[in-house]
Image (tube, rainbow, N blue to C red; front, side, top):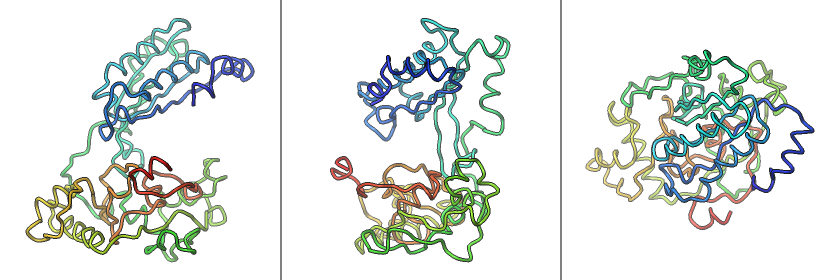
Length: 341
């Protein structure tokens, strides 16, 4: 708990020992803000935004960055305003010039639709007042466009970070979860690496040292973990196969990359077995950029080539976790076991 781990007296003592702080980054829990969550304005976790402000007030970094879901700006704009006011006009200290913006992570190389709110403050004693008008361009340059992609823009083969580009070097048919040979796997032979997979497969030292772009074979991970397939019942696997067929049955469907509810509405006459109450599943398309947002539930995604949901490693790839990062704990799909785990 940040309120205990970074308690005021400890934080003050640490700051006195460490000296000036360049940067504080905070990502408070999003469940109370997210459109996928409860949207509860009284969610206890919403208050942890104030913990970021407390840390900033104590250590006075040069720059502060607060990250959260778009829902924080769309439905809790008063919280965003309060954060901006607290940073720009604090009880003591010079305060910060603050900008907030919704940024699309896919324009920065994240292989999915990833829109996020960034609140950025630069300490006022570090830049002139005249520079404030340029701060937005300094923090969010033109190389990071903030306008949404057109949902119906053509899905062209060879787009950057297609599902095949992101996942193609992993074992095509992973062992079933719980199998004895599922601990570690080796990459597919004969699959040429691209810039993305080269970075994912760099060793921990190369990755953390920023050397992934030029890493050579000896600096690449040779084995990876967490690549285990779920055991689906035959009707579930068949429904996923039909969803994949429906998602590529027309140019409109392919370009929209739409949810299972939309696909059922369009193709139920052709595929009556699509009937299900699950409306949010989306299909990865092999040769297209993954136009979906990865959540913590893998069953929201249908694999681009197989009749299954993605593995933990495939989900991690879409989230840009490097392959040396190993996940531990109970692997569950949801419900009470998920909360207990």
